[in-house]
Image 1: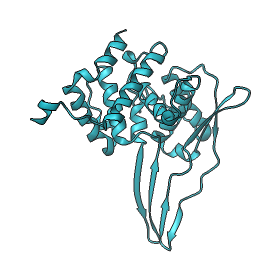
Image 2 (image 1 turned 45 degrees about the horizontal axis):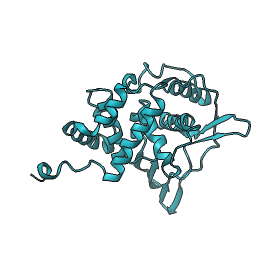
Image 3 (image 1 turned 180 degrees about the vertical axis):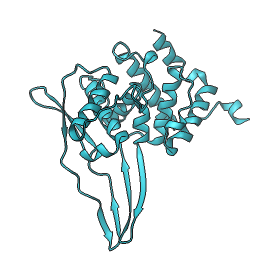
Image 4 (image 1 turned 90 degrees about the vertical axis):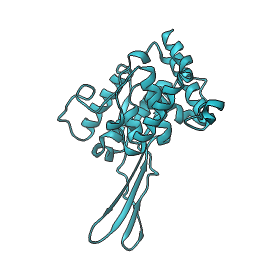
Length: 256
């Protein structure tokens, strides 16, 4: 009844949702020629996007890096990938309890004085391929945005995450957004949490729903999503499906 009187409530906070839609419009305006959204596929963890490789260690990271660059249509852009130093393990908070946090960055992006672009990654990500892809995609999104002068510094990292979704790599960003696990053995127990990227799981769900709607992708994304994102994604899809006027301006931009 209330929805009929006042319209649907926003899926996200009203100002956050408005920012999402404004940023999608900005991305379409700036990257439609290089990355045409209408023909951009949802990237999955399969051989179509990531061909098999016997490489190990840093060579494997380079292989994944090249795959992500190709997906983002910047395979010819010069860039150096470097491994960071090994990270220290989590700290012990009691005799038998240890907590591992996520303060160290999974990746970094920088442009040297001479113009050389360098991206780094944490080598332990080689054991967590979803986070590795998400990290490399985020840092390469920084590269895509590096020469844009009209970005808001306060939301720059959020825009970078949304650029990952725009290029079709949103499943990886969403699934790496937050992870929590408990572990233990006869001598100790502990918890490990890791935050990757900057968008929250609900924001990732909304971003993926916008992507699905704008690319007319009718598949169910939930089998590919973590539990934290799968439910909100379905809710976001229903919300956008009931209110097509929300995405009408973006569809008009794509149609050109």
